[in-house]
Image (cartoon, rainbow, N blue to C red; front, top):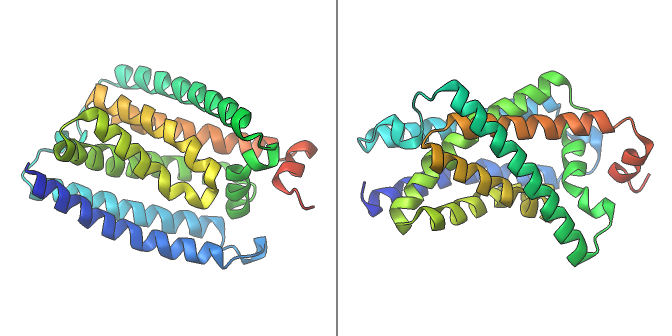
Length: 242
């Protein structure tokens, strides 16, 4: 694959991906109360449809370029090896998150309310998520976003810059930036998540492990938010004005 083809593919996918994201951001900006939010199931369906479309486009562009699906990580992987790599990646992600929170809290002197901004935004959109909603969000993000960002984007960035290391850094930043709707803290916290998922993909040359790790991360995050919502202290953080 030439650099021109890689750059063109990235621009096509970016155009298809950015437009609905901007529209969704404008919609969220116009919502001022929880009652104005659309039903969480409708939000999940819309987001899943967007990412499924982008993932399908990434697969088509790979096919059009004459590249095998294995070039973007869509290949058979030993289940035990994939599971082991995913568990290791998930543990590493949480270790990196804890370190990031400690460092950022020390540097910025941020309050718990400020650090909980990402959880507050998710809570405002989904309320108390049902288990079905949690599985849907974790599953759709784990599959479609990994195809787009790790399988497709990362491999094409590698062609453009000629280095896996630089590609991982650029790809991780591009993955973190769309989470700005959750607040600036979310971008900072998602960055190490993206780096770990990217390294897992590069080492395995397959999507099974990062997909499973992404699923586990999202599932545990949302399950934690659901479990903590009954605590008065957590409610004070989620609703600081109440």
